[in-house]
Image 1 (tube, helix red, strand yellow):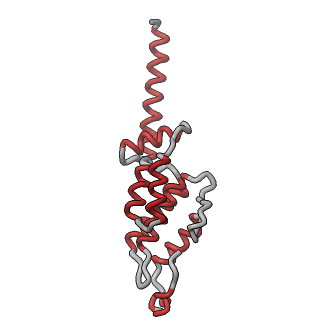
Image 2 (image 1 turned 180 degrees about the vertical axis):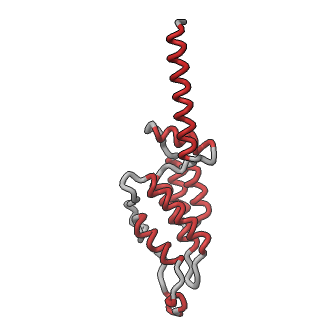
Image 3 (image 1 turned 90 degrees about the horizontal axis):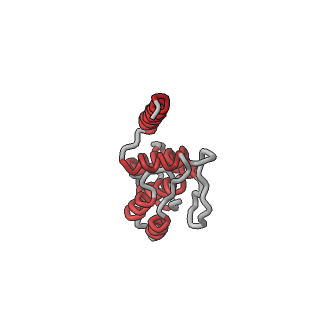
Length: 166
């Protein structure tokens, strides 16, 4: 090999390694699945597991929210699919909603999942076409979750027990 070719290959490897380190620093993936998913989504090859997503929807519609989240997380291990992250947020919301009080821990987890969903959405918000959902967009769901996290005098209203879950 010529010395010039060796230098060019070395430069390309060094530039590629530097780019990978910069991406790792910026994305801060926590698992190897997030690294693989992030790299494949960068080049447009990331796909979710459709079977696990369908299983998650079945659990979600049967009000088994813990099982639904597990299936959705299997479907999107890299946390790169906006729709899947939206359904994870909705599952946290529905599990945390209560007639008397809301579970703040689950509601905060819903906001984190909504942040991921909006960050991965092309328009900066998620809108799903699901007739079973009363809050079909991330904006509506976020407003409902944030409303549930605030403390107001209306929280003491005894008629609140008649409120319907979204």
